[in-house]
Amino acid sequence: MIRSFYLWLIFMIGFNISLNAQSKFWSGKDAYLGQKPPSDKPEIFARNLLTQRDTFPLDRVAFSNDGKEFYYPSNTTWFSNKDSKIRYFKYEHGKWNGPFVLNAFYYAPTFSTDNKTLYFLGGQGDGKHAFVWQSKRTPTGWTEPVVYLKKDYGLYDFMPTRSGVCYVGSNAHQGDRKDFSTYDICTLILSAKDTVIKSLGPPVNTPGFDGDFYIAPDESYMIVSAKETKTFECELDISFRKRDNTWTEPVSLGPLINDGIAHRWGEYVTPDGKYLFYSRGTSPADCHIYWVRFDTLLKKLKPTQ
Image 1 (spheres, rainbow, N blue to C red):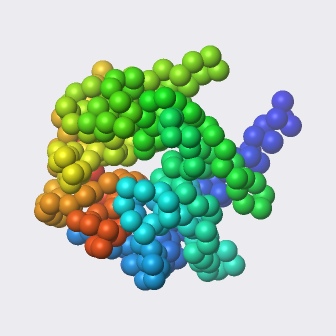
Image 2 (image 1 turned 60 degrees about the horizontal axis):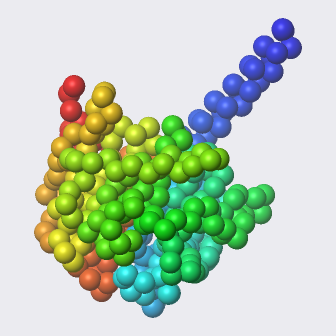
């Protein structure tokens, strides 16, 4: 009994040291690729580091839980993954190193909640199915992507949560997989025997396309690309999950973020909860990844009850 107590004590001390180290890095000068954090007004994130001569960054990004790895997609255009690549920076030996190419033909890198798996969309599919791919962390990097999900319905913006429930944009057996007007934000529950997909319904979903979103790891709120036009211009709204597991009517993130007609997607909140990242552009020519202070905005918008 005494031995078990001491083992538990040693584990907790080590665990707390690890958490403190992570917390210190997030609040240090090297966090977020060493970029100066924005305030309530969105700013382009690391323009000089992420933009290459012939490519630009776009879509959802992903930081590791400790803040020392940063993954982002790059491409030469929209609506095609022919030239897409996942690139990354890694903080080692007291500095950020990169960008390196992790893989080609993929986009939307998304960490599992334990940070041991990276999920991707894209890849070289068969033209008949939608795929979610995964890579596993190894002592020397990541395994080559392999198929995690293969379905005859849409799988877009796949995101896992701590409860084990996943969220995805999908037509979920209604209509043509290539008809994006049929897509809803759905829950996806995986088991050894079956995959159960179910639309969240209104008010999160609307009669048009619903597929670009970010779900908090604890499922307490969701950021959605709302009021989508037929050419996918939109604004960013937020919805909160209520005690009865339904969702509040989405409300705008405000005029500083929704500052005119533009495409806005790839919503992502950093693991420390402080900043919202998203892609914004009126065309590929002016497309950038933006970031903005989010924790203070979240407190303002969160319902009192």
